[in-house]
Length: 383
Ligand SMILES: [Zn+2]
Ligand SMILES: [Zn+2]
Image (cartoon, rainbow, N blue to C red; front, top):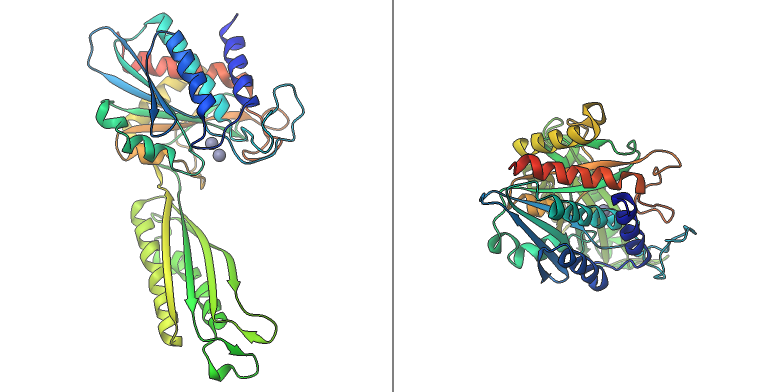
């Protein structure tokens, strides 16, 4: 069986049996079994269902960590091909089945070739989608139990030509934070607004004033950001002024500096508006993902490896930033490294968007991914 056939078989198996974040029990067992079969030292149950496979060769103290994600989404798959999901309401709609299969392929290849000198850590993490998996593995000692000189991760991206690699030094992808503002006022009869304090008027002013944070408080060059109000709920009705308004929203930014400014600025806006109206508020800000920040040296290493596999003409090492988010960002705050995106294809062949019920990982790029991991290890841990 060729490498392509073998990795495709694993990918199709994983695609048929998707598991939600933190519940990747069968996926983790599948991964652990394969790694053991290849002769790696295997550690399971890291940060929940996380798996770490360790492959040593030679005498060098150098080390590298490679990460794949294993979780699926709460989406009902609409594809009808043979390897479609057999779990109702669950689907590998982000290609983590492909990422897991590619990293397994790299472990298989490197265990056989032993074409490096040092230690390779194969990291299979749970729950990337909700941003808890990387943090859980870190909290469980991922980087204190094992030293890694640098870490790398790869994600497919529809809309980029099959097998092309894109990345960039420094901020590649955005942070994602959610906020909730609860305005507490004194509701009352719609005919007598002067008898109370109307939280809808205050809330409307808050929504408008939030628009000034990006436009007036953040640098247009260094602090690109998005602040979106996504929900506005009251407990009023047709003839009742409500006593409460809940405003929720989502923010994206590319630097910690912008993120902290946004967190503070939202509260300042809310506090000012509420004070002027004489109402109370509660404010909650939650960082789900930090911005994904690649270190320049490791980005250069990743670009070099990608160029060796697919040719320089198929690698863009200074791509535009993306407003999507990734919890590998938390790992990159612990250890230097780089996140790369590999094209899943365009149009009918791999172009369907991530998180779409008709998405599928493109099997044609499996060997590109395996090749990238193998060459990256061989170059960074050269014998
Ligand atoms: Zn996703
Ligand atoms: Zn994903």
